[in-house]
Length: 320
Image 1 (cartoon, one colour):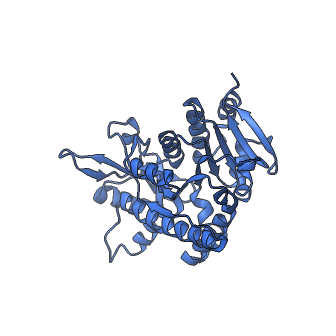
Image 2 (image 1 turned 90 degrees about the vertical axis):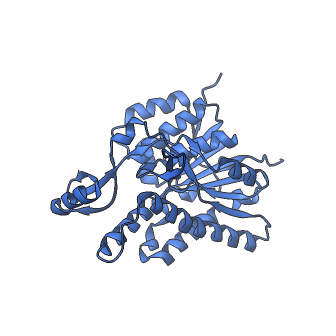
Image 3 (image 1 turned 45 degrees about the vertical axis):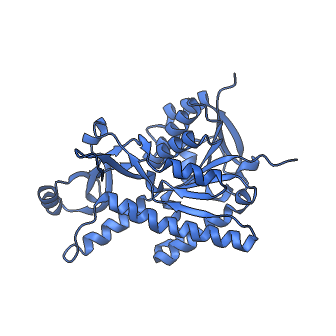
């Protein structure tokens, strides 16, 4: 049977890239990335057109923590620069790991990581509602100091302390989309939109400038999928998070749910889900509503066989 070549967006949670031995530091993170990439070998060798998107929450958190420890000696790093830095480092790990995997398999294919900016709307109501916690935790005195000197806002995290809060905003436009599309269409495996993309806006002089906010990568992935007319999006997350959204599914199942069923799950479980999983379901709804063919939500262990429909949760449009 002839293999059907698809356009595939694979979105990997940032937590998966720093789990296990990754606590040992960058070498551990690199080895964790290599293990996940090894799971992609079957998909890549099937000649699908592939875009890889990765999360960066833990990586940005680590950067901000290091900056706080060294705050007596170095200047603080703005949040948009943290996003750019982690796009570069994680993109490098992914790019090199995929290149090594291809070389060992005897496959000649280009791999490119693209620093990706996303335009956000400064009039977005969410810009004035900082709700997303980032970085280390502070006692009340330090939080008040940074509120006065840096203009930061904070949320209280029970049992941990005060954490800086920033807006979580929707992506409106992917600025590098034409380059991404061209690379994908010529067969290059593209790594882009890390952490949902670096949020930027146009200032009064019409120049691009960074925004102190975060962008959800699931929403960016669906925007990206619509722009390149992808056939499917594969969300890769921890099984513990997936089963809270789909408690009736066992890890080894291969099961389909329609758009109507998805909306029912969103309503039933929204108060129990992590923000990231809830936003995956909302993004899935948006993609299917816009004409997308399917969404997969899987743990990393199922990456190798997901497109063969051997296991995983598949979300599809309602039958006509």
